[in-house]
Image (cartoon, rainbow, N blue to C red; front, side, top):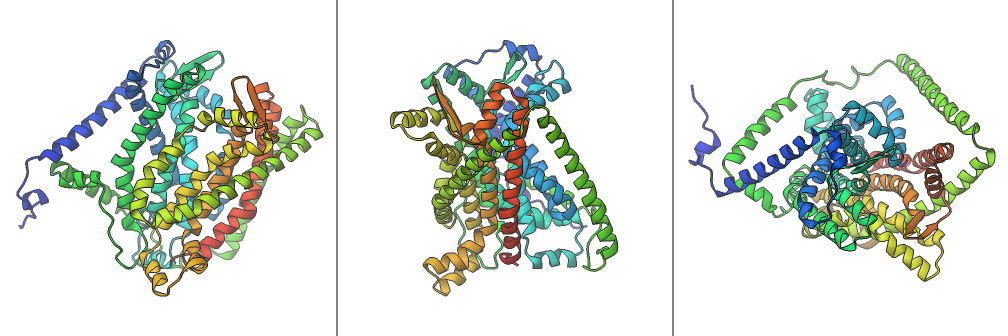
Length: 577
């Protein structure tokens, strides 16, 4: 029997080289950090309360490791959520009716307002252990990472080319095989960019999630977020500078070690039929490919994972007609399903109305609607400003791989920069120049929305097929015609995803941006965000519920009237197949 020699024997080298040693040291350093943090999560909860946060910069490396691992734990949870929930929404019409509105609401309403409830849940899940507080912090970061990843994956699944879909059916792939051979690879370029955006967005919630208050007790978890919170409380500008510097180092590290290789790897999944010029390989990929032991271990692991992806789980859809249900049974099922959904929504609406009616008057609802219209105007202004600036920039960057490499870490750092550190400058400027807060607090909302536009447009432009660009060049398309015939149809699905998530982020950011304070100066703009923020400070639960309900109604209406039709148009008219 003939034995096939493994690659290591073919090359005649089995001993580790210098690159192996460097890679193994790196792997062991990561494992030591994970084990150290893992041991810390098993400590008694009382030790967390007794531990003080030191502003000495010597503590920052340890804090950075703990914060980074929390963010990656939340990222793994977000990926699992994305692969399950977004797939269910894309594959099942009935599931999408429930899941998509819930995602719209969850990405828009202030999750921080519900943090106290989730903290109690996790603390009771692991009583007396630090693990409960750690999971609560990870959940808070998860709420800032999951939504745009889910929407990106959903958008990719709903815009898959029809010929690839038919190829999967003709090869008789089961749903599990199709998921790993078509769905995930086709969605990979956009998903990688939205994963980077999620990591950057998670930094904003790190500050709030690492200092958790339950009743009169505060649990301060060691990390950069709690370091920034203590520095802000003590007005220590030098400590804030050290924290920002540590953030920059962490972002550069995970960009070089993880995201840059991922962006280069995802480029091979672009849907094109011609060979485009190969981009230069990131140094991390070069290191890994020059190793012997690590490359063999990675190949062995990749083969095992590929075998899992080849498992024939589920029933293959070989033909179009055989899998269709009868029209009568489908209509009957739809009627039952819609009746159940309508009853559940009606019951929820009745609970909200009865709760608010017991404590509020009709004029409170009118005030809420007027405030929501003011916030809607700011959301539209923030969206238009973000699109006007970042769509051309994103297209320019996405079409130039060298520019992408330069812009990628800078954009990640700017997106991760805590916006509340800019509040003193904005408040001081508005007071000094006697400007109107109703207008000049709007730029604070732009800070939370613009990155969703930029990252998704860059992803769309990067995924533009090379054959389409060659055809456009051969026909001499320039100027407006180039945008109309090539760029806008090419990036439209990605732009819609970015605009949808940016809109949700703008509504969420209004709660912070419409009430800005620094020192003894507090500026309040008229709007629904300020209404909810002031009701939260006053502890008025009924007004918080009313404000969140009105905000949810506005977000759902806006998405139904604007973004869903655009989604349908993008999947119907700009499909690459």
